[in-house]
Image (tube, rainbow, N blue to C red; front, side, top):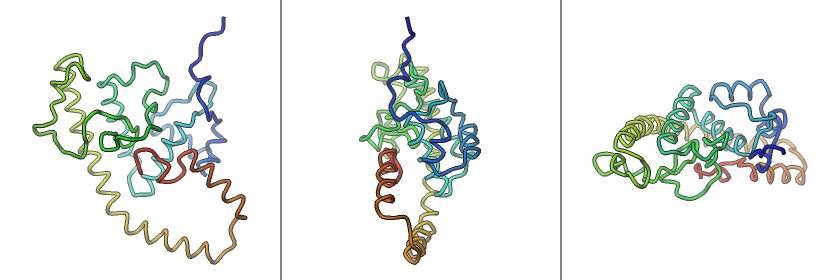
Length: 217
């Protein structure tokens, strides 16, 4: 009897070369990005849509001035926190990306993985309002686990605050670049309207703009 493979049910599976075209990046650059972030090569080297959406988030943050090493640290802290909150017990090979396409609850979601931690990250209620150590039945099996989660969450919030500060400082330059780019494109013939619209629909379906990235809107 054929062994059940949960990947068979995933939609939007692509090879690396297809994903590289979708993300407008060379295959070599995409391989380096996957390696730097510690993302595993999926079974049969077919990448689900979750990979595309996640990497679009990473690319958006890189354009906003966030360094690769900082993004790798942020991603590792998110995975550490998710493990403490038992997000890795569902049996998925890419459990750390299982939430990246979910919507809603933005104030409670981690920046990269979009995981809902169950508390408002914007409230800054860690002292003393956010008592993760005491939430046994909801999230944790014991007080020690809650203390570990609180420690990791504090580190994550500090890293996240630096990321948000970097984005804020970069926004004026980015807005100027976008306006200038529109003027440049306006002076030169672009792709035919129909082809351009088709590409735009595909980008939106895979999270190809800020509006299409859960957790970044």
